Length: 469
Ligand code: FAD
Image: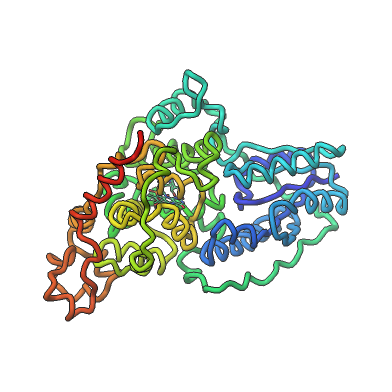
């Protein structure tokens, strides 16, 4: 009897733990449950939902090459997943279900419910570790706790890493054709807003593999020197593909090993630095399991819940729309809304600006980001926001407040990134683009800063100092 393989955010046939384990036992039927309402309730917007839909289309084609049919069902919420899967298993006479684990709380609970439902039957059910090298709980401090700080986590990760942790799973060989046909895919979801141009983020494992190859060839050797300069595009731009599993972290790290004489620790600084970012990704996946309060809208550092966040809707709107009067912040926010992606340096600058200059709750920014990001991913996004707000694990100390103008001069020295995304400033000399003088503002119709850096900084320092420790 065939096994069902339930695809979620692992939209690939190569190096897919669940698929390869199921296929080793016999024929496979793939299943995708689209839970649009639940994903929207989580805060995903058109960009990610569209990318997801295109990813499923690409997966269907990749599966067809292996003669694996893809069944597609719509469910409203995760609660419906156990019954929907059990009904499919019965309908198609499947003998079991395989899937790869996901770690944020709602996904974890959904998966526990599915496991529970299947365990009550005579059907086999298996959840695989796939998105991380170490399952959350496998890497703990000597006291048996989850790590709260990245560096010791990364050291333990390297120390305990064995070759099987990163071993690639072969894509299954084409199976004998079943009599079951793939379901036609439903039309793309109708949403209030339209997604960014699909050409920006072509979906599928083939496109992800090309991106990785291009990154390795053209950018990886300079990664450590160029990764902080948005205009240089020195990073891989693989995050949307990693977030939906169109490429695996193992494929990425194996590529580093292959290019770097088998090491993730020494050798080429660009490759080593890039590999390290993938460990950050894993760190935050462990955090959501170890400290599930972060999945319940709570700060990691509980005493920071007392911060006097301001309800300043006009300023929040100005930030969302890229009209704060701080050109680098505005360029960053417009990059997000225009392309569905933002450079990491700018995510830090924009998030710190919202939380530390405007003293607006990080949760509002987190949800705005998630709504627009094509790579929107709960663990990394929450981790990044709480880092910037100094409420998180291993967060920036509260007194370290980026001066956006200094950041701009350092990381966009020629003002080119600003000119790309805030075209009204392209007409003024590059030298003054970081902080346009007031007399030029009217001529280019660009707003004056909505907040004064020094006063805002002091307000935030006072707010943190007044916290009970
Ligand atoms: P590269 O520099 O090429 O890095 C390779 C991969 O490593 C990335 O694709 C990503 O999967 C992972 N990675 C890199 N940096 C981090 C990090 N700090 N934390 C976790 N993983 C990392 N990343 C997301 O994937 N989804 C998000 O929703 C997200 N939200 C963020 C919000 C804020 C406020 C901040 C500060 C960071 C956020 N990040 C998020 C992390 C990081 O900014 C992006 O992963 C990165 O910019 C993606 O670009 P890239 O693929 O070119 O990265």
